[in-house]
Image (cartoon, rainbow, N blue to C red; front, side, top):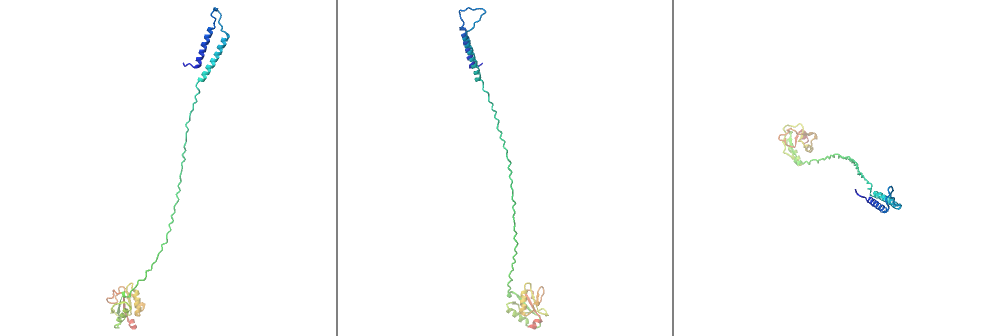
Length: 218
């Protein structure tokens, strides 16, 4: 057991009082049976005072040595609640309207210039379908003078009832001008096609078969 300071002091005081009471007994007085020794009043008062003092000191010592109430601090862990806000991103895609402007097709009509016809490149054959000798030769000379490529005059395969100006495809213009130069009607123009108005004239561009009408005019 651990002796506290207050209890040690009380024991010391009590031991001191006992010693004092024993020393205050008269040694010469005989011991009488049936009687008790009564200490002096002063000693009793001192003992009471010391007792009260010692009791107070003991109580005070006990109060001071008593453990202080333990303060229990319970720390409650702070709970942090993190609320994640859902962030919704709305992406609005703008419709891209592509306006295609169709250009109206511009049709350019290019008129090719009329080909330049050269008389000297047009082969002209005059055949005599009449009974008049030399008329074909005379008219051939006339065309040569007008810068046409007039071939030597020949006789027609047969007598012609009327003058006819035959032309190959693409040479109608030449036939028209030759008819005018010879004094023939435009009605006399006839496509050559597969006809053979005179021997050897199939490859010529314009073939003129003279008839009685040209002879009369001649």
